[in-house]
Image (cartoon, rainbow, N blue to C red; front, side, top):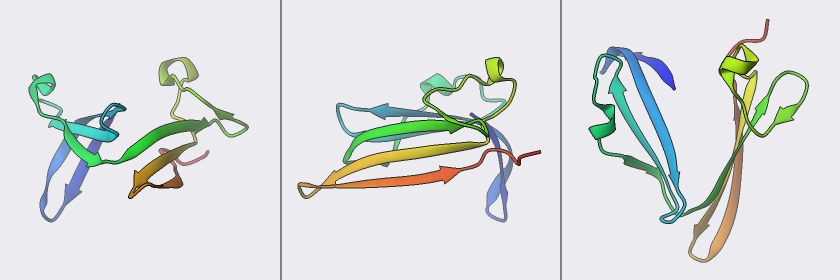
Length: 106
């Protein structure tokens, strides 16, 4: 993804952000670089969530939920993204689900 970050203690600018799920270690990882930084592949992955069993993304186009999304093919971002993850901690599984909207509906 590409996004802008601003705030009183954050540098302003555009950043490339990559996420990956390491199923072997149950970790959601992220790395970020300023858009002008060339070698993002050399940056370390940072764990942002651990003890995860699974992560599922669903994409809403305004009419139905889809299991995958290609913005080039669709010509736009999805109206909403549902993130569902299962976490295993102390031998107890918990499921979490939240929905985010990457754009405002016309």
